[in-house]
Image (cartoon, rainbow, N blue to C red; front, side):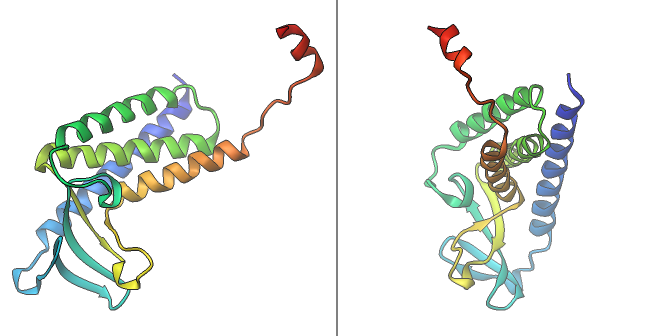
Length: 174
C-alpha cells in the first residue's frame, strides 16, 4: 500500500477524533439555565452575537440537515460506511496530495457522522451561523470535513493534468 494512503487515513482519524471530541464537549457543557428553545433544537451559547452560536440540533438528514425526517437512520449509516469503504480503497490508488487530503477529509466526516447515527439515531450538529442570514444550517466538524473534501475533490479534478490525445492514439483504437 502506498504511503500516501496512510496520510489520508491519518487525516481521517484526526477528523473523526476532533468531530467526536467536540460533540462530547458540547453535550457535556450544556447548562440547562442557558438553553433557549428554537424550532429544531436549542441554543445554549452565543459566542459572537449576531454571528456565531452553539445550537444543539438532532439532525436526522444528511449534511446540514438536508433530506431530514427520520426513518433513514440505518440506511444513512450504512451508506456512509460504504462511501468511506470506497474512499479507503481509492486512497490506495491516489497519488496527488490534494486528492489524498480530500479523500481523508471525506472518510473522516462520513465515519464521524455514521458514529452518531449508530449511537444516537441522529447526528449532533451544533455550529450555528444562521443569525448572519447567509448560512441557515447548523452543522458539525464532520459536515465541514465532508464539504471541504468534496470541494477539494472537484478542485483536484480540475487541476489534474490530463494527457492530451494524440493522432496515433486515435488510430490505434480504430
